[in-house]
Image (cartoon, rainbow, N blue to C red; front, side, top):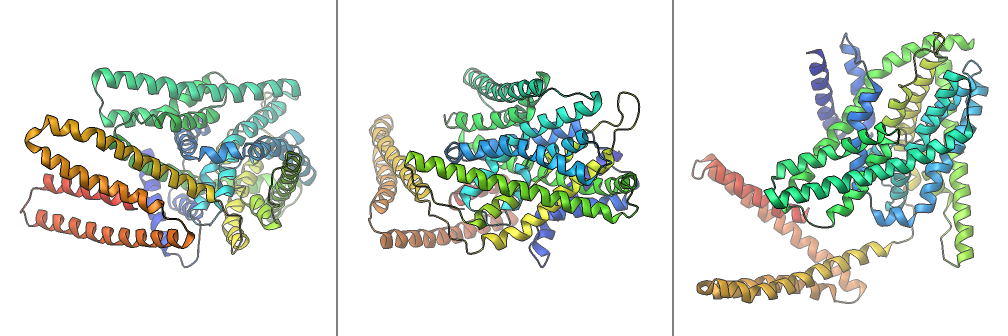
Length: 546
C-alpha cells in the first residue's frame, strides 16, 4: 500500500506541476517545479522512496529514449552527424579526463578513480531534460537538433567510462585496451539489437495482422513494449540498452513511413505516447526532488572527511564543478566548430561562422538529468574488502547538484543569450513542406480520378452522386496546388495570412458544432453514444488545423 500511495502522490505532483508552472509570476522550467514538489513530498512523508537504479533505468529510460529517437528529425541528425559525433564521444572523453583530474585536485579526499567516475556520469546530457527546457526557452531549431542528437548518443560513452572508473575503484586496476573494445561492442551491439528488435516485431505484427486482423489496442501495446524488449535484450548481451532503445525508436520512424498502420491506430497511439511521455518525464524529476533531502544529509556528513567543517563547502564544490563542466564544454564546442569551418573551406563549401553567443548557448544547453541521477546511484556501497566505497555520498550529492545547476542556469541564461539573435534562414524546411503538400495533393487527385469511374460503375444508381462528390473533392485539392503555384514573396505571405484566417474561422465553427452536440446530449435529444461518435469526428477535424 505504501508503494501505491507514493506512486499516486507523485502522479498528483506531476498533474499539479502542469498548473503551477502557468501560475508562477516568472518563467520557471517545469522540471524545477517538479523537483520542488518532490522535495515537499519528502518533507511531509515519514517513509521515503527506496530507489533501485536498475528498476529506474528499466521503467523510465527505454520508452522516453525510444520516443525521442522516433521523433527526432532524421535529416538534421545525418546532416550534422560530424559535430554530433564530436560532442557525443569526443567531448565525453575530454570531460572525463579534464574534470576528473580537476575534481581530484579540488577534493583530495575523493580518490582519482572516484573523481573519474563522477566526471563520467555528469558528462552525458539528457534528452528528456533538454526537451523540457525547450518548451520554455526559444532554442533555434537546428541547435536543438544537434543537442538532441548529442544527448541520444553520449549516454553510451559516458556510462561505459563510468563503468570502468568504478571497476578501477573496486579492483585497483584499469586497462585502456579492454575499455576501448568494450565501448565498441556496447555501441555496435546496442545499435544492432535496437534495429533488429523493431524490424522483427514490426514484420511479425504485420504478418499476424494480415492473417488474423488487427485491434488498435493490441497494436499500441506492442508499440509500447518494443523499447523494453530492445533494452532488456541488449543488457542481456552486455551491450548498451540505452542505445538499443534509441536505435529502436529511430528504426520505428522508418517503419512508420511504410504507412501500414491504420489511421485510427496512429491517432490513438499518438495520444497514448504523449500521456506516457508527460507522466514519466514528470515522475523522474519528482523522484529527484524526493531523493534530494536524504542525499544532502549524507553528503553533509561525508564532507567532514575533507577537513572542512562547514557545510558551505558543499555549495562551493557544486558551483566549482558546474563551472568546470561549462568551461570544458565551451572549449570543446569552439574547437569543434573551428575544425568544421576548416574542413568546409577545404571542400569549398560555404559555412557561416558562429558568433560567441551561439557557442555560449551550446555550452549552457548541456543540461543533465535522469541518466546522471540513476547512474550515480548505482555506485556500490562497499568495496570487495568490506570497507565503505570512498566518497560515495559526496559524489551522489555533487551529481544531483550539477543536475539542478544545469537546469537552473539553462532556463535563466539561454533566453537572454538567444534573445534577438539573428540566425541564418533555413528555407529548406519550407521548401520541403511545399514539396510534400504538392506531391500529396497530386497523388490524391490521381487516386480520385482513378476511383471515380470504378465507383460510379459499381454503384450505378448513385453515379451522379459519386461524380458530384468527386468534383467537390478535386476542387479542394486543385485549389491547394494553384495556391502553391503563385509566385512572389508578397503573394506567398498573403496566402499564409489567408490560411490563418480560414483556420481561425473553421476552429470557431467546429467549436460551435461541438457545443451544439453536447447540448443535444444534455437535453436527452440524442444518445450519449451518438454524441461521442459525432464529437470524435469533430475532434479529428479540429486536429487537422492545430
